[in-house]
Image (spheres, one colour):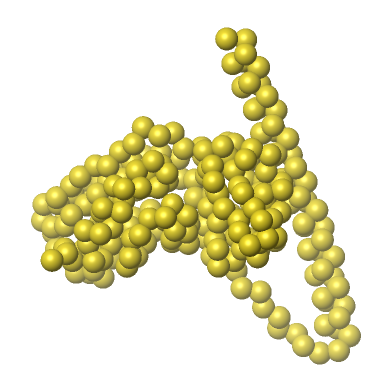
Length: 257
């Protein structure tokens, strides 16, 4: 018989939340009568320890994951081909430690006690800009794959996949900026944004009459074009810097050899 609930806590190594908050969460989670797994860290484990995560996922019929944005976590597990079944995510980027503990104790009815606390770690060093695709938003346009020069993606008209996330360069979320549907996320990005995994905002139209609507639509389109040009330029700059850093790394390696 499967155990009812397991708590999985990502001790993120990308500093998307402070070390103090991670310590506070670890300490607090140790005081609940529950099976708690401290994952060091979830991104790395989805690449290097898939069997471990699948085993944990199969052990419980309900999982509470304490990590970053739910959209990012859901798609990262799917991308890693990890079967986690029924789970919910408590976002430690937006929720305070007290709010997380309240949800565990009141919302999930987990009593205080002594946790059965385990640490799952990996030595894998994941780039800070580990990309994740939201398949529900991806329209398979292939812009990201064509824009990336580091072999992170494979693409054809029927499929887009992240095949080498570790090839992604630090401080180069350029492909995500070029995505027209905001389908690419970087869970290790230190900001609260759609690019980091927040839900894209809904577009609303509140005026529906006559020439005023036409004028406003044209003005909004002009603004979007200007904004888009700025985003594309930013993406080009980020990609250029990543290439320069890559070349420097190759040069240093050749000199050392």
